[in-house]
Amino acid sequence: MNTTTISPSQIGRGARPDGDGSVQVQMETGAKLGNAKIFAIYGKGGIGKSTTSSNLSVAFSKLGKRVLQIGCDPKHDSTFTLTKRMVPTVIDVLETVNFHPEELRVEDFVFEGYNGVMCVEAGGPPAGTGCGGYVVGQTVKLLKEHHLLEETDVVIFDVLGDVVCGGFAAPLQHADRALIVTANDFDSIFAANRIVQAIGAKAKNYNVRLGGIIANRSDATDQIDKFNDRIGLRTMARIPALDVIRKSRLKKATLFEMEDTPEVRAVQAEYLQLAQRLWDGVDPLYCEPMRDRDIFDLLGFD
Image (cartoon, rainbow, N blue to C red):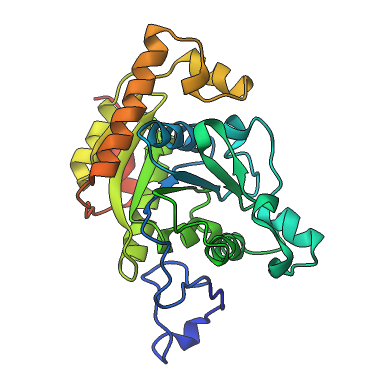
C-alpha cells in the first residue's frame, strides 16, 4: 500500500488525481484483495454502522461464506459484539514490535468471532496526530502479506463517519460496493448526501460503486424515499427501531444470538436477505448528489 502524500501542485504533472476528493492515500497499481466480494459500510457517526456491519457479517457466515470484518474507526469498537471484547488493534500490535510488521503473527491482529467471522480492528493514531487512511492502508497490507485474503469470500469495511478523513476514503479504493446506513431523519440523510458525493469522486478512479441505502432504526422510510427518488438511490434493507437491537449491544452479542422471538427472527431474515442479495450481485448506481441547501427544501412535511 502506497500512502504517499500528493500535493495539489503534483496533480497534472504525473500524479493521478483522485477524483474530486481526498488525494492523501492512493493504492498501488494492481493492488487487489484476492477474489473476495468487498463492501464498505458508511453513514454518519452514531447511526449504527457497526451494528449493521456485524449482523451483516454474521448473515453472510450463515450463508456459508468466509467473512472478514475490518473496523476502520479509531474507536475500535466495530467487532466487539462478534468477539465479546475490545480486541487489540493493528496500531496496538505494531507498536509492540516498534512498527516492524514482519515480526507480527496472524493471531496478533486477527481474531475469530461469532460463527467464524474473522475480525480486525485497524485502530488509529491519537486525535490530531496522524492519518486514519494510513492505518487502513497498513492493515490491508498486513492482511495481504499474510495471505489472509486469498481464502476469504466477503470483506466488510466498517468505516468511520468523518467524510473528510483519509480513513473514510481508503476503503473506497478496495470496495466493490459502498452501502450507506441512514435513518429516516434529516441529519443522517444530509450526511448520506455528502457520502454519495465522496463515493462519486472515488468512483472516477477506482472500481467502487454505490450499492444502496440500509434504512436503520426506521419504522417508516418516507423521508429516505424522497431522497432516493430525487438522486436515484435505492433502499436495500430496512431495520426497524427495536429495543432488542439496543439490548444486543449491551449484551455484547449479535442479533443472531439473542432470544428467539418473532421480532428477532424478522430482523435476522432481513439481514439474511440483504446478504444473499449482495452476494448475488447488485447493479451499480450512478447518483447525482444534491446541493446542501436543496435538502432543506426537499425533506420534511408539507
